[in-house]
Length: 201
Image (tube, rainbow, N blue to C red; front, side, top):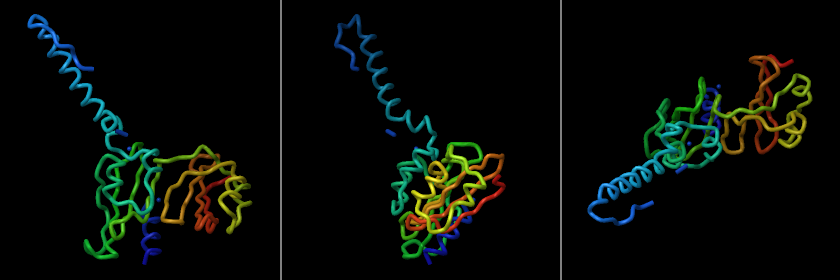
């Protein structure tokens, strides 16, 4: 059942964080002003990080999210609620599955989180996290299923962007040299199990 849910997630899927001195009556306006400023500063210090990122999912936040977290824990990291885009079963059932979409920090970017039994089983993103490492067709052809992550990253010159993660099943994305060219690599248990490319040269 979990593998089917994970597959569905992969298909559907292609941020906290001084007082004025006492004076005489003649100086009372000065007392009020520092107190007001102090209050404003305190409020700004508490809310600035959220306002800065507008409760959107960023690359940094995405990397903090781990398998098995609850929806509430993830909302605390992101700073905003998600929007339900898919739900299977009823609340309270062990296989109750809900997929949320979170607003992201980036144009044309998207991210989904899938929960089963109240726990995160898949996180996926497009355009939120990216890698500067580029891949060529020659490098792609050198990759063989069964290779470890370390072997693959050595051939490619670095780690790609995680676009989907479900337990020990992780998918990385790499951009090619030309516009639109890319490759995706899927690992399970730390070993390459699938490689796919489009337009590599």
